[in-house]
Image (cartoon, rainbow, N blue to C red; front, side, top):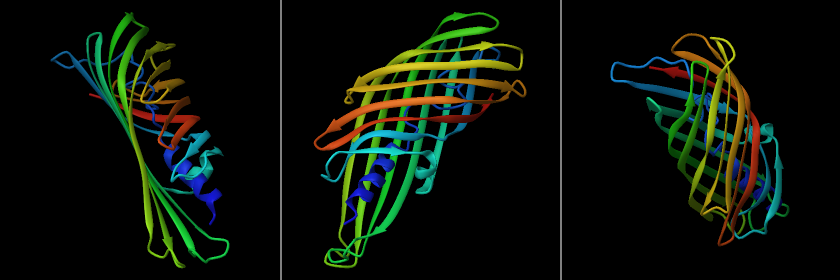
Length: 263
């Protein structure tokens, strides 16, 4: 019944997250920006919507189907994307920072079955959420550079639904879902080449309910003003989770673009 296609769609739905933790303006929250305006209270705030054109590869399993290998480009994923939203925010006071990141995607796909006996068509929809809450502390800071040590918790939630139409299974649907939490720690940093241009990046690694969770990125940013900047770079994220037949052992990687507003 098109099980190969269903496994592929299910895996794409589970992995399309740019999960992970933080493909944002690569400034916030995973990297600080040295030159920033401070409010009267001493706090600095930022908000950054972003876009991560990530492909994925790895091994996945859902709906009690055998584990399968997936290798999908971003264009393959984008063809099935119904909705996606990614944004991040940070509050900083002196060397201390609190940051959060939220990513949500919904994909769907439909395919006919070879014989049309049990069903004429099989449709898959998958919703994925990843949220990170973390804190940071500046180990080093001067007029052009900053290095932060950071740590936090990331929550993953994946829910997929198979629906059958026509044939003996007409109207039948089945859901499979998983939720897990990982702790991560690492470093983020930024270095200003000029008052407008800066380099930035981060590296995080951890585990929890997943056996391994990691995230690295590097980017270049441009400050249009004291309150608005943009970044472009490359990010890779990997996670290895399995429980009760649900397998999510993948690496996502691709270019990222972000826009940061500070106030």
